[in-house]
Structures are given as C-alpha cells and as structure tokens.
Image (cartoon, rainbow, N blue to C red; front, side, top):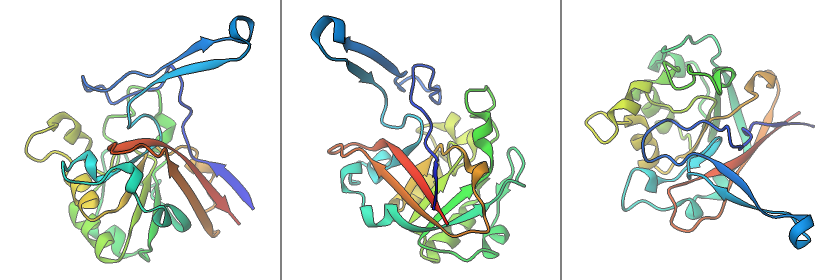
Length: 219
C-alpha cells in the first residue's frame, strides 16, 4: 500500500482566509533543552487552520462540535474524483456529478493546492452548484474532502454573515456531512486505483472545527 499525506504543514507562514477574526498562526518555543531540559512549544491557531474539518457548529448555534463528529464517516473506502479539468472559478454542475457513482466518502481533486501560499489561493477556486451538492447528499454522501478552501463560490467569503453566505457549507453541515478542506498533494493520486481515507480531527470539546491529519491509502 502507498500512503499519501494530504495534510498541509502548519507553520508560522500558514495562510488564513484574511477575515479579521481569523487567528494568524504562531508556533513558539516555550522551553528548551538548554533551559529546562526539554523542548516544549506554544501553538496559537484558529480552528480552521490549514487542512481542517468542519463541524455543524461552524454555521449553526445548535449544531454539534468537532468532538461529536462520527469517526466511522472519517475512516474507510473513499471515491477519488478527478476534477482537475475544472478551471479557475468554474462550477461543478449537476450534470458533472450525475456522471459519478455517489459513495459514502468522496474526495474531489482540482489541483488547487498548487496555489497554496500565493495570492490566488482564495480567489476564483472551482466550486459546487447547490444542485450538485443536493444530488450528492441524496445519493448518500456523508464525507466530502476538497483541495480547495471551500465547496462554495469564493465570492461567498466576501459575503460573510450576509444573504447568500456559504450555502453549500450550510447544506452539507445541516445534513451532518463531514467536510474536509485545504487538502494538498492530490496530484499524486492514481485515480484508477482503490483508496481508503483516514481523516482525524483533534478531540476539542464543543469547538466548530479542527485541523486534521488526512492520509490516503492507495492500493
């Protein structure tokens, strides 16, 4: 078996989406071997930093937190979908997903991770139509992973809190779908092979999301 680590590295240069409340990453040394006999570090970061998993609490006050996400949805066979032909700002349509075999766990690769740490990353990434998301939900999808920042139109980031803000996020999370964003290294996936995914968040009580280590096992 081949393992592909689909997780971005968290460091002090880690990008955030730029909204005022997002915490910039700070990884700082607290103790050193020379001073106290051991190295220890302080980590300061937001719950949606780098490769991460969303919980329903992200958009719904009465939603459950990341500690209550069903781990059975986060580990197991996954369908890896090659959408690298989608251009910047292009929509995944209902017609696109109707051609797919919808499964419980689905990973969508656009190759967008190549734009990480560039000004382009948060601009005009490919996204899903609401009709496409509904089709996937109706087909039984319970886990959705992406190498883009969001399943929504990037302009939704500019409408935070307003009408039309992140409709696909809300639709997916209201149905209890596990949503993983900011994957990397999806260009290493052999789409002709079978895959198993392991996507585990930190067990943070009552928190809306968590950085996640996401590993793909390929035959």
